[in-house]
Length: 404
Image 1 (spheres, one colour):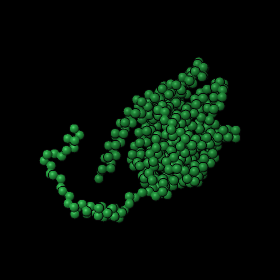
Image 2 (tube, helix red, strand yellow; image 1 turned 135 degrees about the vertical axis):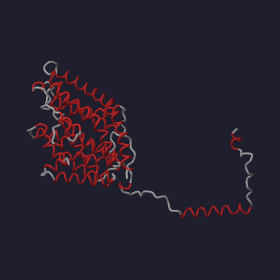
Image 3 (cartoon, helix red, strand yellow; image 1 turned 90 degrees about the vertical axis):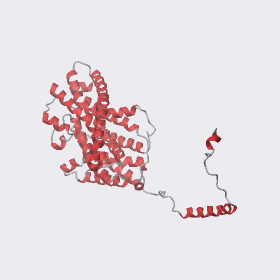
Image 4 (cartoon, one colour; image 1 turned 30 degrees about the vertical axis):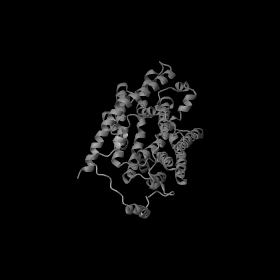
């Protein structure tokens, strides 16, 4: 059967006969062809010592360990707000009932610093090769769906149970996520970090508009960190560039470059400088969280921050790259809705049940319920609304880019 498939059709012309003269000329023709190939320019290859600027980042698997870290950071912040923070709603005796757990939760506010470290890493990763419109659309799709629901839910809870006064203009301003520059109070105090993230995105959008490259990210890191130090005496400018939190974003971006291109003395120098500036700023962050404090609070906080930098450095160097548990992706997806919903809802529930139900039972039921609510928001709000926003953004960008 195979011989029949390979046989020429009946109407095909007979094969041409090769004359002895032509047969003798074949080796000579091959020599000429070989010499011609030698004269062709060789295929360009990147030299062994080419700079990272000349190389695209190598494709690497998703770092699922970062998803797990994000959830741990969120749970740390939840622990702070619902156990140890002055606004948690427990009387002093109630806080003591949690024993050593309360002592650990006292530093849970540092989970925000870990968020910012991871954010610098992930934003640098996700913006590579993107145009500024696509970058902006991706940030809108990521931030707004769950946030809109959280603002409305928190405002409704506050209006119904009267824990704090909230107005319609305040809610409207919060729905834009621009309440901070507008001078409007956050519906939920946790939202202050979103204003910091937005300022980071706006600044980094300059790099995205130019085209994200190794060299430009390094320039951005060095300049942003230096400016954040020099503007310390200029409150408005310090706020505009998020000076207090710059070290974490910068270190995260530098560690992404280490992860994708390999470490260099310059990159590790940026990480080290960021770590030292972060240690200096721990004192002002402690004051914002705890009020008056002594060195006995600074040392544990500084050690935790140092641990964050060390852990992220290990991840950048390859540690945890083989961790691929599927549940870590779900854990990462729960992080943002959990963060948005936990404080107003949690403190309201504590205020209603304190004194009637044991504290530990309230806390366990509350965290379990908040995690379940976060999953529902992710599944039935974030995903469908983000899909709609993606389609809307795609058509809008096409219209903008093709308009004359």
